[in-house]
Image (cartoon, rainbow, N blue to C red; front, side, top):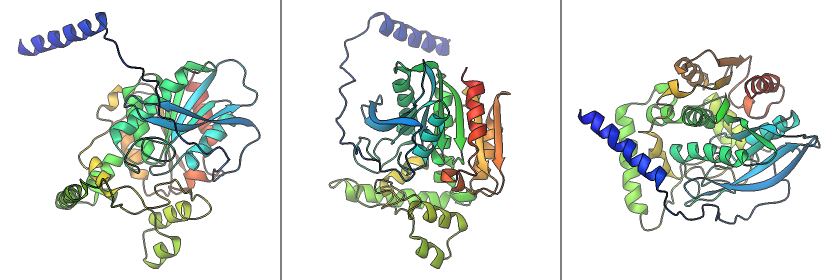
Length: 354
């Protein structure tokens, strides 16, 4: 009886709020961002699409910066895709490449910088929150849904690397997201709690939390200062015999291939304080709620492959699929056009955004 009483109380409260709306402030009063107007991507500009910088806001009041790509031959309302990742990257890197390529294939696409990073707003800088980052995807859907040339019933998302897991979390929360592609995905909460390949221990996790807690006390007056460090220089990664996947990250983020001055991974890395934010956080808690279509794409030789395959096993329904790209590593799917299965990704969205 007590459970029923609580349920009725919640329903009554909700009904009261709906029938008696209160006056709210204008959430469109966004922060004015100083956006770079020249082309500063790590990939060449396509002559097949139109491109412009745009801003939108999430429901935490953070203004996000994005690149909007549209087909030059657009006609009528088109399906749209919001794209972000990899984790610690910016829209001038992999997500922008995906966005431009999918716009060439007939989609309106939005590659955005997550809160606290790149050209987006939010203070302090170079921080992350799996909750806020999930909301960033939903806010991108808000924005796309309100564009005159977008069919609001045909919106999908693409998440790359750590944003692959975040994209699935967003899709499980938001039925407006009709189709999701998670590419070379990480489950960031799993990595944060258990380390790579689940080799971390509870004691190691506790010690990490203890050190970060002490750092918070020290940095209270100044704000976050210490950083976890971005990717190693390629020579240093090789000289210190780092694992292959660490060297692959260096080969992308620290060379002309993928370096960008606003990328967290290309530079000093995340603020150390942020690291505790994924040690006791879970995402995709209710995979059964993700009813719309999902495609997980992984490289055969990707160190992260186990996370994608095990996440796939949790998904329900017959509209979920996974493909393994032969001979591809984790970072190959960041930018190697001969390995990213764009034909498959395109057909997936065409079949599920209709």
